[in-house]
Image (cartoon, rainbow, N blue to C red; front, side):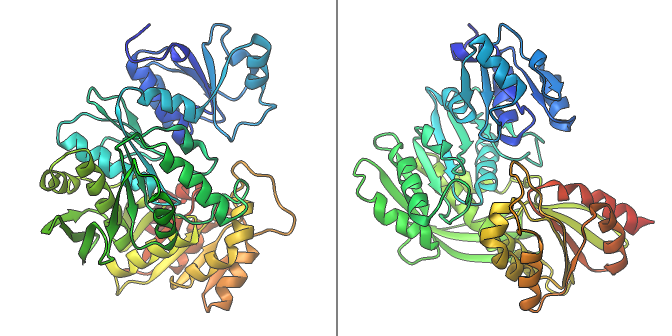
Length: 464
């Protein structure tokens, strides 16, 4: 058995290997020497990257893709029971392993940092991965998005630290035993799995309870859900709680965030001393993510001034206010925001970065259940834009819900005074935006679905 590979992971088969979470685990296993195979619905750059590492990637799902000698089949919560490869695994008595269990097995024996929260996980995990790499600590990491620098979402490192994005959506983050856990915020989302805030709190409490003895919980001091969770977790005497934020009671206090165009300068007070560093993306919420990363690194014993300097080397994550290009004097930026809080934060960040520019948004709602519960709030967030185009709902893993359409968002936006246009055919968007945009405008493609594909197309239309 190759060093660092759990026995069950020597010859894994991933169903949906191209997914953000699945591909990261597959990459790490491949780099550790496992014989990795899998399938995905369509070709992608991720599939090509996995092949380049030595993995076998099939396109489409078929029983024949699963090798008889596979040591296990790795699935996410999005894989349905009738998937032909999953059915074949049962016929062959091949063990089925959830993605979170696979990731947990890779963390074994390492100093794990698990980053949780309703939003901001990918950015914060990425900031830590970049900073620790910059300090030559050679961490392993598994992230839900590709780093702008290395261009990958995961890597096996020879160091002792493993940084992982911890997904609360299906409660899978409860599988990890981190030395340091970060909770950025606690809000109601993932309505197919959580019926109330009480269920959310219980899930996060369980996650916090898995921190190893004498470990540390780094948690926001300003966000109401995180404050409530902090009060609940204080009873865990074996866990040290470190709060961060603008509250005067925060252990790591955000003293000032100064916008510098598409970057920010952040000053914190830590152990009575002022520390200033640069964050390469605009917006107060990204500054807070960086401070959370700083607090987590300090909890592992890394000097704060070294971390602060290294965090300045972070250059962003794909789809997190990522500049796609400029044409005809119009900048096109891509945002993964799909929850109202994220949408509001990114729109406010863009307003702060370019206060004189008109802001045009192309928004694609993600999930019927999320739109059903939060559509009104999404529409209110769009009122921060000068004009918006709203697409049909991207279903992802969900079946349609009768009566739930993008009209819920559009009606709420118009009630808030927003200028909103419904576009049902995604192919019509580039021409529509090119007709609306003027030199000096900012165009923001926003959502967790395939709206990201429109950025280059909009730039092409602007250039023609």
